[in-house]
Length: 117
Figure (spheres, helix red, strand yellow):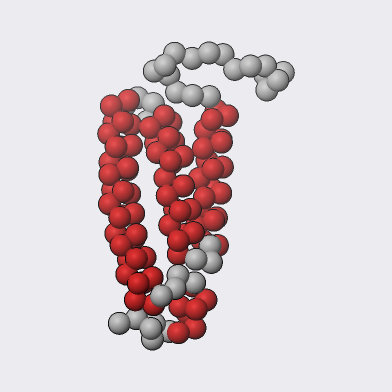
C-alpha cells in the first residue's frame, strides 16, 4: 500500500509530496474559516496572515509545472501584493481601534460607527 510507505526522497529542486500539498490546502482553508468567523478584527488580521504562508507554498511549489521561473515570480508577486494589502488593513485596524477604543465587532456594529471621529 503506497500510503503506508515512506514517500521517496526528492531532490532539493523538486516539488514536495502530495501530502504536503494537501496539508497546505487544509491549513489555508482553516485560516480562511478562521478569518471569516473571527469575532475581533485583530483575530481576522492574524488569521488572514496565517493563510498567506500555505498559499505562497502552493503557488511556489505546485504552480505551473512547465514554468519554474514563472512560479517563483508569481509567488514573489503574491507576497509583495498581499504584504501591501496587509499593511493597509493593519493601518485601518489601528485607526478603528484608536478612534473607538475597542476592536470588538459586536460593539462596533451596535454603535453603527457613532464612536468614530
